[in-house]
Amino acid sequence: MLHLRPIFTALGLLLCTIAFAMLLPALVDFADGDAEWLVFFASSIATFFIGGLLIVSNQDDEPTQLSVKDGFLLTTACWLVVAAFAAIPFVGVGLSYTDAYFEAMSGLTTTGATVLTKLDQLPRGILLWRAILQGLGGLGIIVTAMIMLPFLRVGGMQLFQMEQSDRSEKILPRALELTTAIAGFYVAMIIACILTYGALGMSAFDAVCHGLTTVATAGFSTHDESFGFFKSAPLEWACIVFMILGALPFVVYIKAWRGNPSAILHDSQVRGLLGFLIGVCLIVTFWLMTAREMHFTEALRLATFNVTSIVTTTGYTSTDYTEWGTFAVGLFFLLMFVGGCAGSTSGGIKIYRLQVTGLLIRSHFVHLMSPNRVVTLVYNGKRLPTDVPFSVVAFLAIYMSTVGLFTVVLAAMGLDLVTALSASAQAVGNVGPGLGDIVGPTGNYSGLPALAKWILSFAMMMGRLELFTVLVLLRIEFWRN
Image (cartoon, rainbow, N blue to C red):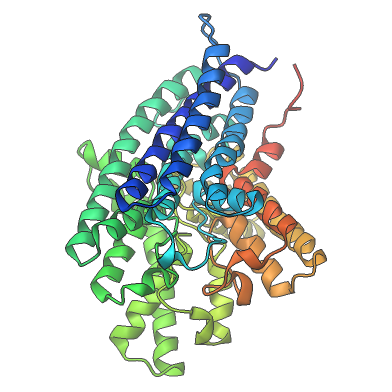
């Protein structure tokens, strides 16, 4: 039996939070003398009214214990409903509701794909609203992962369980504890990023917007040229640092804060991500030096920034890397699938699952050579739970199948294969830029058919909720009593 009252109450609280957030861009536009402040103010009133109505009409003095199915429905409804109301200000500034919903979903899921053009000429309020959505979305992703996914044992989320017990009555209080601590680190990192950008020459407004979207590994910029607008090597290197920090598991920050600073570099995910980034960045640097005849320092900066941006699924660009040649195009397409660490704001497959896959392949070959040998899978110094290998393999299979399915659907709408495939891969991985003239680093999603935008909006949400994996691994019928 589903418990709808607490679900509606939670939705109401979220809508009220979004309503208050809308007042910030309203104040900015009001201070700038832009009439668009009325759009945000009216949107705030309407959203707060609906949210308040949900809270008042679903009050219940009886405490309710949410089941897994309740949590599944709640998290799914949160992304759908919040995006629906977050889209209202975009409609008020001239977008169709399809484009507005796409922009809102892209922001909340920290994907970074946009249908807006001429960003440099837009009112500052709408630019700030995009950044706020991504800042809230980054925190929302962590909250979803910490509270919901440990119940579902979705291939790697067990890392968040600081206790060995899998019983929900122990996991949930610990998850709430961890979420509070992680929110503190998340906000602190955003503030540090903003201050760093300001110290290196960004305007206060640009620093705030880019600080929100960098730590969230989200990618919305206030300029059409994205991060390349600033043409500043120090800013790009600072951005690289904060993109990586946002892509690391936030749990290791807590461990370091509690007196174990070595936990960060001793974590297998962290070492795997940093090692992968260093290797790929050096390869691309060598390619740019030989094929494009760039100087080492310029090649290293461009390679490190754009590779880090795609791997961490941030989606910033400092240049059009599709002009680097076919090798770079093929490599960057593969990088869309990687992602950062589990327990971070990054999307994609995640380093953890790729590492476990490597362990499985290695153990398989060992078993082929020594059939009687018992191979124990160990990760991060601990034996992997027996259900994790299956979960990881199932996730990879369903992830790739989902990308393939969306590719076929988009191709059926008349999109060329490169556009359809890269748009699907970036949406499920929450990357942002794809390949081609429409969805590439210099493209714009406004050129897609309306139905394609709705499909990609759904794909973005699936990527964030890992919905396709949940449906397989729950091993229960959703509507069963």
